[in-house]
Length: 126
Image (tube, rainbow, N blue to C red):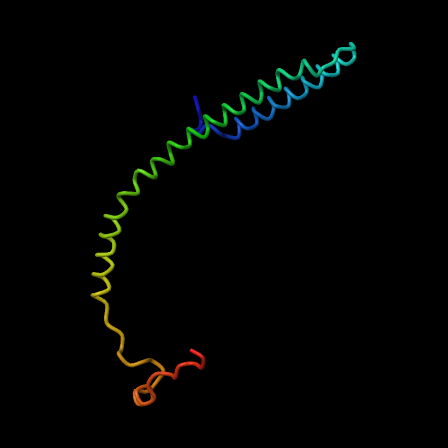
């Protein structure tokens, strides 16, 4: 029985680390044994290295294709956003219309000073 619905759990990570450590130690032992017997270990290690590279590439491709499914689900549902945004905007405008309106005069100025002076002059060089 699985404890989680996810594939990557701490137990899986620990298992992969232990498996990788065993493979590295076995490779070191094989190289040491072959060198002690006078055999060149390079041709022996080339094939496992190529196989490991091919497997890693395939795993990377499978993970990329598996994550594209979840990305495409998000992209499929973006068409619904326009309708929901329109509904939300309507609700926001209804609430805004129900709120009291602010005072027409500026908060920190008297009407006679604001209206007497008018707009600020344009800066030089404009």
